[in-house]
Length: 310
Length: 67
Image (cartoon, rainbow over all chains, first blue to last red; front, side, top):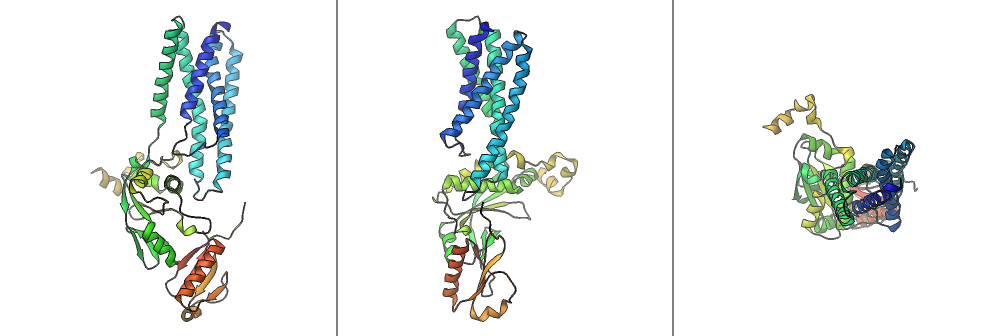
């Protein structure tokens, strides 16, 4: 195994670096604290080390080591439950919660990224063993770095899921009161009894209408978890204008049952249309909420599907 | 974890002319306000106290419900 030492170390370092690059605080607003980073980086490096050891172990016919690999992979399953548990606990104290669907999506991503790192390190180590091992150190380093970079870009593009802008056309809507009921365009939201609250909504509120592009988008956006994710992200990115004793200012996403359109009603801390529309557009489509009725025979027979495809 | 009553009418605030519209037997107290301003003020206080939302039944009756 000593022959492979440099190869294992190099692949493990590059794999660990990959995990670091994938672990950026983005629209999920998580992880936000150093300990979160540390625990994920540590597990990422372990995943990278496992990926780096796999091929040399096989080449040396150390089959026991390969068996250990599968045993270690089992450990990464715990990441999902660990993330789920932490985020669920934190969510209870959020003014606008993420919702279980979104948390499940984040937890799944964290688990999957470790497997991705393991796979990428395996590719890096294979490149090193078969192509670059005999080259000069300088060329070997550059070659491996390039491989890692290409893998990073591939992973980033492939794993980038759809966003709400791919499913719906998004436009500003007008907030209207009919008696005590508040609407965005013609989508009903709620009944508000306080004159003070009505005045706030008329002065500071913003409404957005999301029109699904097809029946699949309509089914996906109808999901309550997906709608909660939209409300959460908009509130997080534009600032929250509410406290525990003003629940009427909670951002809401309601559905027009006749057309499948969604409406978002929010009072953000900053009233900026560009920022709000951009926030809605970039909300990730949650894996758990995706529905594709058009992939089924019955779905394609629907009147609204035929109407769409014309 | 805190426990609370959700989707239940926690308080009702009525104007004098509509107090006969509310019968006893429901949940929460019924407050009779002297006029519209007082009704709004009582509703605001009750919503802040109970962390509920004020809804208007548009017949002189306001209810506070926690969601």
